[in-house]
Length: 219
Image 1 (cartoon, rainbow, N blue to C red):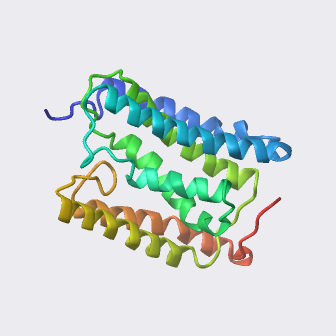
Image 2 (cartoon, one colour):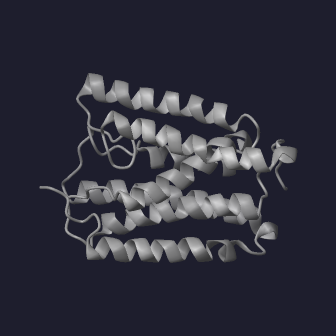
């Protein structure tokens, strides 16, 4: 059945609420530096719990299919990068996470995934929460931990994009899987759009912040 949820009244309400969340998100990270260790573990824990709940929900509703249901979408991959940064201290990955988290969360909220259940369903709320936690983690890293974009950001992004989309392409091609590339879309144009958007985000930062190329972490 064709998805009629996108740009419906319910979807527009979600877009409004998500916009408000993005507006107030910086305020939700104030004065958290002394508690950064706990906050980072909570963020990682929430990401893992959300993924587990989603998988359990799909199984319980009888809709699980290994060719479509594995948590390997672009936003999931971005979430794994977030865990690598905050839990495993792979801070160099912030170059990639910064743009991916923005494009994945905002893009996939606008081009809402076709969830084959009538709204409201727990999968809708888990989907929204997964995007909100990416935005919050991004704001937290920038506002609290003071992570900075380095001059290798564009190169790093292109490398990760190549690795991820090649992997999904090979998986879809040789296993008859149907995993989205980006923006809840399986066509190749979505790959080009994603790479373009995640790359162009860095240009204003690198142009207007030339004196701050070095990657720094506030401990």
